[in-house]
Length: 172
Image: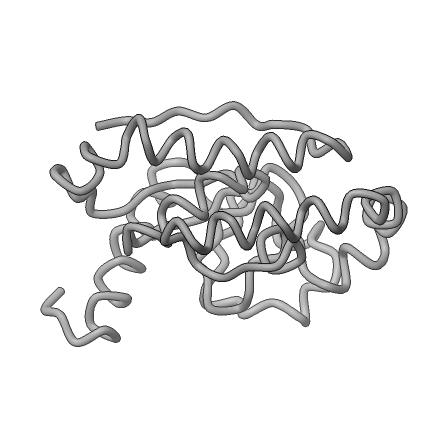
């Protein structure tokens, strides 16, 4: 099963639509996800619904970032205006996140959805030398495309998934 998502631009009101999309995708694809149990999924870092869906169903995932890997440092430097523009929507966003939690989705904040933690595997589409705040990333969990291309990225994904299964106590 392949689910392809378009990289949605995060605009003030579209955050709410993306959160609603998580519930709609669960309704449309949830049965297939539970039946097929993909070995892993690749999710765009700005695909809020994809991450929520993967976590709800306990799927291993690798995040893909076309440019900078977002964390608190890159957000503070590059996207602070974006977060300030979201302030009027904060109550509605929180309400939708709580609604999703009642539907079995993981408890999240908007910041935790947009900034993957250091425990998430990420493929970055830029060379390592161009990543801002490189020192703040868990470099064992980030693969920089500038250093090997798609074939090496595929090998890296397989290795990461085997290591993740081992950490959880499953055989690789």
